[in-house]
Image (cartoon, rainbow, N blue to C red):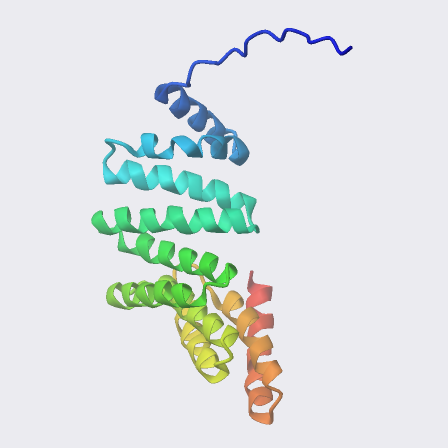
Length: 216
């Protein structure tokens, strides 16, 4: 017959203290080891406890960056939506509106990736208001481009193109010129329309794209 072997009782390792978790996360950050950072995400609430908003926003940003390294993937995108939602609140409390607007756009991007277009649109609209209210052209540009992509995905082409034109106006005014990004999104959309007017609009945009690409 089959002999039962007596397995030794499993040894349960003592739970890792919060101090050790902080040390491990800090070391992983220094080593840019995003997989190691994400191992400790289950302890995120503890890491955020009794911390001022600035520290919370920084910890959330660290886990956000780790998930961004893992993209594309639905799990990472869903985690990013959760993390960004929390970070948006802390940044608002701290009146860091530029960072808040950028976080809203990033949240919109991940929602769009997850085919949650209506929620994405809400985030882009909020970001656009932040950008317009404070003169953050980068935020305004990214928000308008996002709104354009949502509209096009929904089959509302004219509205989508109009939003991307708004993005193109804000693009060269932003701290980091976004012209290339916007043109990369807008040109294929216009070409797909396949009418004479759209083709006429594309010609100078292609020339502008070439010029911007050479400048980089």
